[in-house]
Length: 360
Image (cartoon, one colour):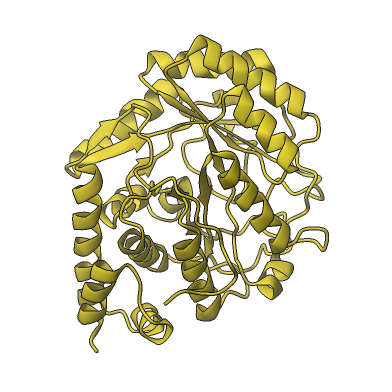
């Protein structure tokens, strides 16, 4: 079977047998890639048209209790310039974003014990009270089920929690011993059962990653059926144990974005800042490979260069209005329309929980 036949089957059936998927990943020619991207664009546009959804990102703390080996804000990085936004500063970011047209705010931070459940619930409640027509997305890591229930009751509707890699032995190579993929999956299951729109995702080209790990991730996401999938290339940070590891490539990331789009026609799929960091037109290329979300930064300009998960992060000096207008122009240039509304996922809300067995 040729790759172009594999792409056609993937588009029709939403999956491939493992060996066929492996061939697609490992034997991709430039011609195959163009066929893949065209198929992904067609599937995305059938569900969402030419809309690209904007999410207002607020990176509100770079303190983290964890010590993940790849992350620039890991606990052991003594060179990180730590900060926390106050509740009023977070609300001010939302107010400014609202005036710019944003209707979804993504509150992202390290796993910072300072921000207790009570504090997070208070912030969410105040955002929803000021802007009841807006959605609040949280991306603050692993918490007990009771915490997630409290966040949902306070008004948060979406939660992003990238699983990074589903294979336990690979997960252990990237994280300290106290973190496990089993607990990560428990969190994802809890979030979905509670009623959140849930996002998971993987790193592309992370240290020690093989094609088998990538296949496991694809089949995990196929069975879990998240509402959002966030993938981006691994980019090393100078002050981590992986400082000398090679970054994930643009080509690998684009191929996987397109494959994920064919496997999940209605998922919300960002073209990430990391993609724009490894190539000046990375986010545009991500949209052209099937992505349909971008996340301009609403954080105060004074803290942007402190939230450094990896080296070389772009857009750290721009004001929110500049980010918003820049992204609009970039999308228009490639023939897409920026949509600042809530842009809810079209994924079926019926639970689909990971069983640990791949489906092919």
